[in-house]
Length: 140
Image (tube, rainbow, N blue to C red; front, side):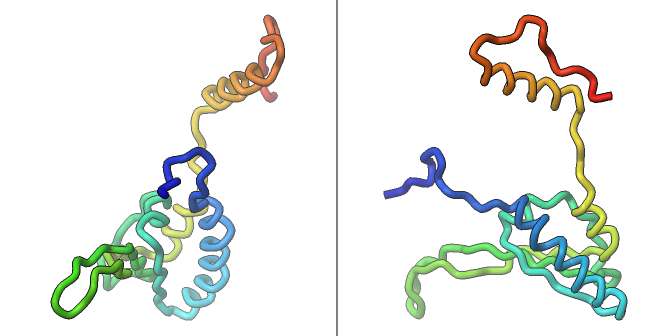
């Protein structure tokens, strides 16, 4: 049975993973390696890498970080191997340490008016009787 399209089917939380796991390791371990003048490699799944903000690539010889992007790829049976999924490197992206860290850790805020409007819609959905004069005002 394939339940992957059903409501509440568990999905990876890449946003949480980048904030709680990737960033602290880049800051702490990556900061040490960077201060020593050492390069580093970060291996990620393609779907996780796709959730990160666009990183500014640099030529390999200028890079501090090699982002090694992997994916499971289905390999058809041949004379020597059975059909199976194989973990395969599908891409390499080279970046400098500080610009990549800044890009990953800097939020991209949307329009505050759109956010307030979304909050108002959600508030209205939870009220038994929608307000006639009650709206979220300026936060200041």
